Length: 409
Image 1 (spheres, helix red, strand yellow):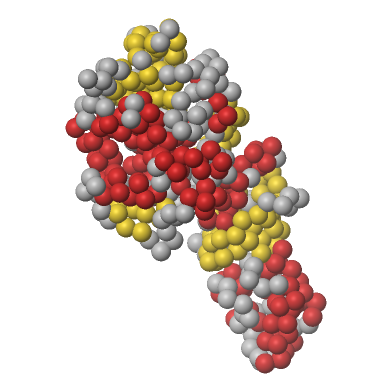
Image 2 (tube, helix red, strand yellow):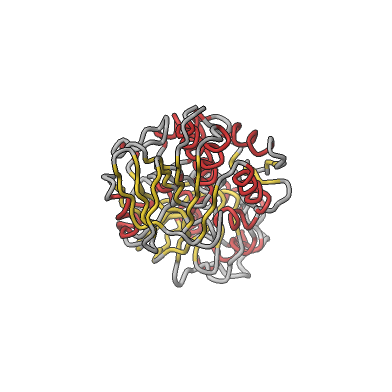
């Protein structure tokens, strides 16, 4: 019979639950307890994906999968080799959670309810004897020989043999002090996955309009992202902006979220191709009104606004537009410049760039290299992905490895 090991999992989120149920399932002789500081379990899972829970992403090639993580790519190569997207899908489907893949590769439960995922995890925990405590925050971990003294915020002290830290990300540097006391270096935390605020934008009033592909570039850098772009009442959102905010998280923090971007609304065209297209359109449709007839596939109201800000009135016909007006319109289409001042959290997808230094964690076990017996899982580490199910996949995978390692399998 295996030795009974007392395991504390700090944090009742996706990574913590997955680590706890994995360990309990693989080694029923271990005594596992989850401590969640709030009164809600799996809160981020519940609200994710608009309440549907974007479980993972149908990117089954690990070499491509790791490209979706601004921080942690190299570390995750080993992680996903142990527990992949396919493993995640199999894990849930083996527990009667039917999944579906949407056209953009995001995977959701067929029920379209995140409660399906949370109910599954909580049920697995209870079936496998995991004890769950809510409203129990941890203020310190004190190593004592081969054991750890867990100091709760109420002053209570408990003793454990192994500890999994899965408390998630937090942009407040002060909240990491108890992990630093274990000897760990914390990569400075800053927000990731946010939208751009554009005060007094010349596109005001067009909120809700989106384009399927645009290229957004941060001026003065080589940083850019291409994808769907959404105009909001506060500025810009959509996958292109969110991806850029993730990969440029530190750069934008250093700029105090005050910077300029350039938007290419027609990235499939070169400048010369656009100019030829416009001149040909002018020759073929001289009697058509410019603001009603665009040579490129843009939403009508966006095209109308682009023409109006370049001085093209609603009565001007294509036959009357001069080359200077064409050049100004092309400039706006390819390099429209906007002043970003501030950011807005994207719905429930708040993610932190930064966390426990990955050089201090064994990717094969998730065990601390600074303090043996301590394990990490999820976003508490310096790992974060773009939107689309990637952050949950990192949580499932790292949680699984931590749980399996502690189980001794």
